[in-house]
Length: 346
Image 1 (cartoon, rainbow, N blue to C red):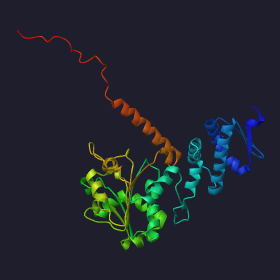
Image 2 (image 1 turned 120 degrees about the horizontal axis):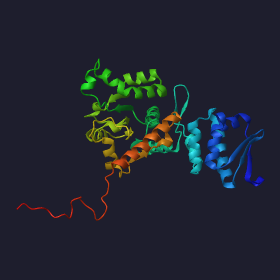
Image 3 (image 1 turned 45 degrees about the vertical axis):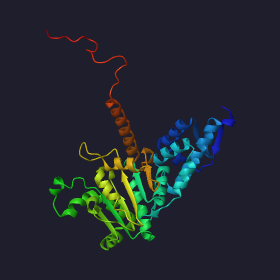
Image 4 (image 1 turned 120 degrees about the vertical axis):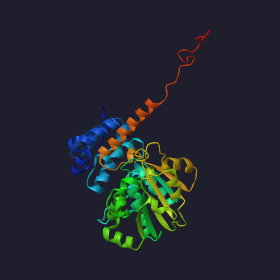
């Protein structure tokens, strides 16, 4: 290895330690991903490898250092995601997403897309009247849509926000729960309330809800209405039937925007029931005014273990689907008795 195969990045000791990770876990992942060696020096960080690999690893480490300076910490999810994007030469797009601040939580924390997939999803919400956000748990589908709704509401782009979910057990099982109908469906809508409290604050939310400017209701309450000048979010759309989905989509009026979110791998519908989300994606995919964002496990922004769980289930489901494929009968063969003369009764 010659000196031309090495490069030194100037990093302060604290940043270099963050990039290396606990027990050098991040450094080992970077070394394996880019086929380089990392050596921590007093003057910074030395990278040894081929010229191309040094360049790629340097770009990644500079981006990680930038992220650390802004956030004060590096997580396993952040490191793994930026490695994946660096390998695809898309780190510039990561920086663009990082600059796209939608709004702030009640505690002052910025809400912004954390992945390129999330950035594309947010841009679709900005530019399309109807957007489908499809992806596994933890990809920020509902939370980002909620932030965009609140931003539009505060900017007077819409006059109200309507959040809805299918309460798929609205029949006999819910009937056994105590309280009125609102009490029965509130557990299904709780994740929507939680997001609103975090972004808007409980008092502001309650005040706007009392005025009828924010509505959180089960999907069944949408029937027969025309929703003008509203930002409408349908969550858990994989649990709708085709009839419910058609009903919802035909409620949308002038000046409105609708976001439909769902995870097509987590349906709670009775066995044999077709998902309205699956049908809608097939029927509406060719309409220009409708955007479809397909988030993946790379866009999971929860604990890194969630990403591993999503990937494990995807692999399992692929294997199971291959097992269910019908076996092809080799050409020239047929039934075991084919070609045998039939016996005739005399």
